[in-house]
Length: 175
Image (tube, rainbow, N blue to C red; front, side):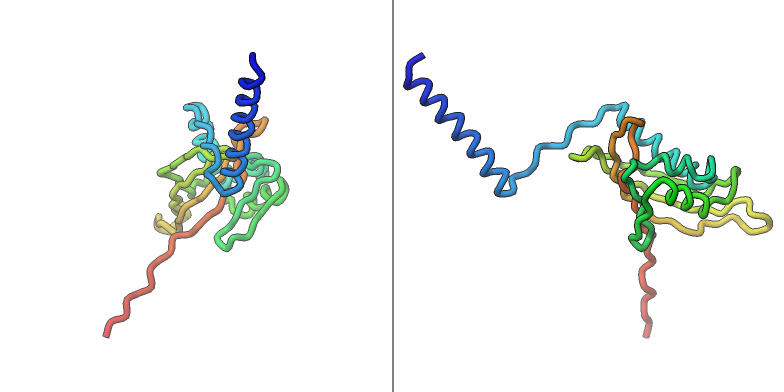
């Protein structure tokens, strides 16, 4: 190979590398998030389904709930306050449980999208009171979750789960 061909190839390589670095520095869009497989979608949906069971029943003294989060994962409540760490997450599940036969978290309309970190998701939540003595069955709350999922050695886990309650519009003023 001639000296000129080597110099041209070297100059092109340096130019490509410099252009890539400059584009990244200027805020060019990051590389597209890796695609999720069908198995990824199923495993993430199972994670969300296990969440409702774990929070409603407080299974294994809250340990099942805590195990759904990554080691550095967090649950953010309606005020944005974070609960982190396995023992604190387990305590949260114990506080919210109504017993082994309880079912009041109904999670639906789950949307999952790939992200650079793993995946993100949103779901609606409807909270129902059912079978509580003589009380009538009723909807008592709801909203939606916004999630960040990460793949761990133990499978998909919540990196962050935030609950956002439904907001009622202010009543209209009539004259």
